[in-house]
Image (cartoon, rainbow, N blue to C red):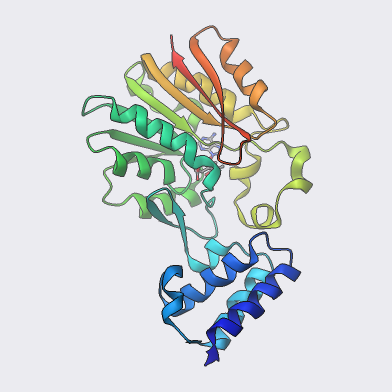
Length: 278
Ligand SMILES: C[S@@+](CC[C@H](N)C(=O)[O-])C[C@H]1O[C@@H](n2cnc3c(N)ncnc32)[C@H](O)[C@@H]1O
């Protein structure tokens, strides 16, 4: 066994040298994972299995995502199982989901919500757990991601569908109250600017599925939301910080939306657009 505080300090140094964005936090998360406790409970421990810890720290230094090493991602009030083959849900999506949770709470029981491009099922699971009585559908194209979503959504009541957001759920046309989506949106030219953890470990359809300008699936989501939503229904779609104006334009130019608005995330970057079906 190795003294815990010394091991964490050494790990934080190792991760700093490796270019990890939050070295101290990751060193503590990995220590908590080895000890089988929450990060807040580390103060109660003095020692750690040095071999097991070093193996994880080295994997993180090689830029494997923290969540792949711990096996879980925390998103709002839920915990998702994640790993190879599924996109790790990101904190920048949480503000958009919070707005849609608030909108859903104002609806009568039995209202319908659809999460397009659901990945691990993170958004759908938040809606279902935070808004009792809401009927939630989740749509995901990639069979690998669907397998993770199936595990995460088991017992949640969310109705999971494998399919393309472009032609999803035609039986629900004109009846849906809320559509929310964090689709793939990174332009192909931005390849070099994407963090190693994402580029090498998030599945390709989750990053590059949006085509050359990154917006192919956003355009499909706009069309599908226009078809699914009842008049007065609300859509929210995430985008890259440089795509705010382009996504507002995708919605505004169709003439079928009112109150097309851009919103910022917790780091004050342009992050998502909402609109109301006219
Ligand atoms: C950026 S990830 C987001 C996943 C999840 N919504 C989240 O926020 O964690 C985008 C997801 O969209 C899926 N996807 C890509 N193209 C799609 C399409 N045409 N229809 C449905 N899902 C699609 C990808 O497989 C990936 O799981």
